[in-house]
Length: 320
Ligand SMILES: NC(=O)c1ccc[n+]([C@@H]2O[C@H](COP(=O)([O-])OP(=O)(O)OC[C@H]3O[C@@H](n4cnc5c(N)ncnc54)[C@H](O)[C@@H]3O)[C@@H](O)[C@H]2O)c1
Image 1 (cartoon, rainbow, N blue to C red):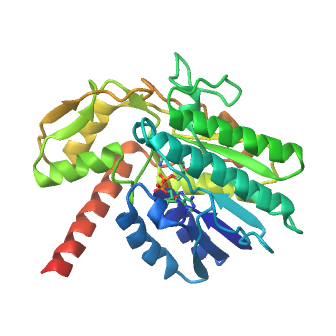
Image 2 (image 1 turned 135 degrees about the horizontal axis):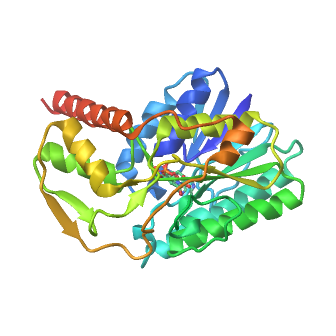
């Protein structure tokens, strides 16, 4: 298969490229690393991704550049964008509008115009639900976006459904708090592990009682590739999240246990629009994709910690 992966220098995108390359597909790995929340990290990941077999890297800003990347392509996995609830307040709002909404609109238009239209998987987010109540969120629940980021993802989904109404095979994947190797530096576990390894207090927004359907990136890749392979109704939305939600403070206890440290907590002001609870109903993903999350939080955290340690060792070797 010929596949375009956008956001290929990012956390999730780089893992999707690894999996596609490993399965022998031809991949055009698209990104504009200067648009990343962490450009230096994206450039490093970009170099790793571009070295994989069958992968060609293309530096394309989806919001402004000519989009001749989708010609002759079977599948587009659209993961590029500006993630993060916190960042989307203030100046980040315009960035989310540009790199989520404008970029997606242009990419979908390019796919519609292609002589052979590719199938398109589009990354959305659990944040469109707002906070979950007493049961997990189902795909047909009404959306309650509570931040500019979440609003941008609601709009991304709307654009996807409009394109599907016009015959494009679009699938919308709502990812839930993804973690694992290469997790973004602004995300909770990344910040916690780095702080613990430095011997600093762990910076926690709020009281630690917020809970998340933490989902390992390996499970996210499996679900994404299953969505690529299955013949799905155009415009469908599917939750990709762990079926259990875990409080941040319980996740911290697991994390510090795995690290073998007793870390202090430094409480920081809660972020506006950060849901009290995210909780994925995974029945649709199971029914349509045969997917159930396979990585438990304890194992997944070990995996992420091992990556942070390996990165530090590599850095020491480089500097020393
Ligand atoms: N990580 C999560 O927990 C999570 C949860 C829900 C949804 N998502 C969504 O999944 C996608 C990937 O998330 P991630 O965590 O890997 O983020 P990431 O920031 O690591 O990756 C996004 C990549 O998109 C690129 N990009 C941004 N704007 C671009 C543009 N205009 N043109 C080309 N490239 C551009 C960035 O350079 C970056 O490398 C995003 O759409 C995000 O909103 C992520």
